[in-house]
Amino acid sequence: MEIGFDRTLDDTLVIRIGGNWHIREGLAPTEELESRLGAKPLPSRVSFDTSALGDWDSSLLVFLTKLTTFCGSKSIEVARKGLPEGIVRLLQLAEAVPEKKDTGKERQKTPFLSRVGEAALELSQAIGEMVSFIGEASLSFARLVRGKAKFNLSDLALLIQECGAQALPIISLISMLVGLILAFVGAVELRLFGAQIYVADLVGIGMAREMGAMMTAIVMAGRTGAAFAAQLGTMEVNEEIDALKTLGISPMDFLVMPRMLALILMLPLLCIYSDLMGILGGGIVGICLLGISPVHYFNETQAALNLMQFVPGLIKAAVFGVMVALSGCLRGMQCKRSASAVGESATSAVVTAIVAIIVSDALLTLIFDRIGI
Image 1 (cartoon, rainbow, N blue to C red):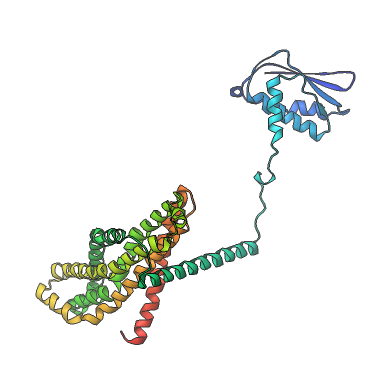
Image 2 (cartoon, rainbow, N blue to C red):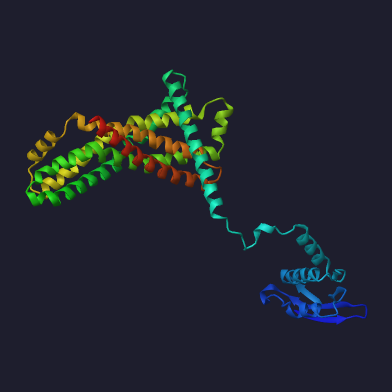
């Protein structure tokens, strides 16, 4: 690339451009040219001589763009008649779309109070949407009781299978490990007093009243709640939910209600199964490591537990089922129409469900303690 300068008598600076201009050789420096243009007396006009110009690419366009911008800042006229026609068209195209002012690297930092206000507005909007969704779900349940809700029983049967039988392997593994952990934790202290037999009481009551329902709900939140959010989110992306509304079919009745019923029906049953698996896991520790005979361990568990011990866990399991279903369906219905939004809705569904499970468990535990259950 070659650059030369000539100044005419009428204060015109002629820039001679020659040689081949390729971006692989780097960009042409503009410092010397800017110093000549900025030297007093300033030229009134800039023209070009490209008779010796060979091949060129975008590097020449970058050079001329910088030159034009500098001349504009000095109020120097730029004559483009000597440039190739292709360069002239590209320069006109570049100038046709103005640069956005808010795309620069320097951005003003949002004040703290503004961020707090925006977060408060987003929170209030999220709470409003959640309350509205719960209200619509309640109305849908009322229509179900009156026999006016429309959904396919085959879909309900399929959802019951997915939420019930297909969840047994992971529930078995998690519940048995939780029973093992409870037995180990209890055995560490009870062994000091020679009361290893009460490991059966600890595991049985802990699983029946609390851990069975809790662990089942958390597993179902990660397994089924996320699946519900992904399914409904994909339907939202594919405009299937809009199609149901166009046909006059309520998405709450057709999509949300079967999922809520499936979890409400299956979670208490899974909770009972989880209790049994946890007691079995505690029995493995008690029998194999603590030397308790199977008959003694079974008799101690039977003496510690009665039907009333299972009632709090079953009530919690039903409530947790509602929480998981509402969280998954809410985030799925709120999904935006993009592939990444589906993943975000699934993640948000799991987080929302787990938080709802913990909060509702604390409230139910307090209520059961006050009424003496």
